[in-house]
Amino acid sequence: MRSGTLCYHPKNSTNLKTKEIMSTHSRIRMELPTGETASSYCRGANPDHARPILKRNYNTTEKVEELLKLGSLSVLRPRVKAEPGEIHTFNDPVQDVTIAYHRDRGERLQVGCDEPGTYDYVWNGSRWYLQVDRNTRLAL
Image (cartoon, rainbow, N blue to C red; front, side, top):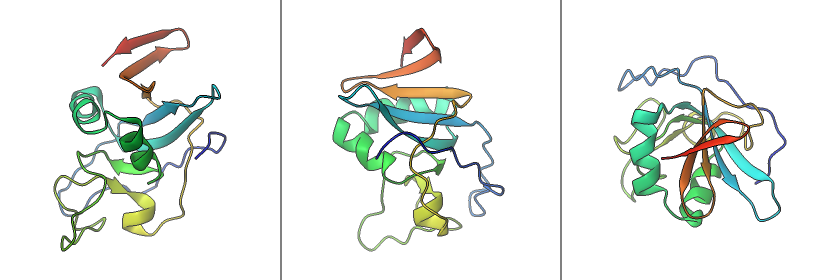
C-alpha cells in the first residue's frame, strides 16, 4: 500500500439492504516508518460512528493494514471480512462487516487517498487521532 493515488468517490453508494446513506467523506490513514502514509477513502465514517469502531476493532497495525488493503470503503464496520459460510455482498452485507467497493461491488481497487475528507483518521502505530488541520491532532 502506498499513498499517491487520488481518492475514489463512488457515484451511487447507497447500501440497498440496510438503506444506509451516509455521505460523510473521510480518510483513514496509517503512518509508515518512512514518514509517508497509507490511506483509504471511506464514505460513511463520522466520528460518532467511526471512533468506537476504530478504537475497539482496528487497534493494531496489522488490523489497520488489513482494513486499508480493502481500498475505498462505503461503510466502516467492526469486522473486515465475513466468517466462512457467511455471504457478504454490497447489496446484502453481513451486519457488522465493512463494506468495500472493490471486494463487495466489483469496482476497480482504489488504494490510497490523497484528498483529505471531512474527517481524517490517523493511526500512528499505537493509537488513533483525528487530524483537524495540518498541525492539530485530537486523540480519539
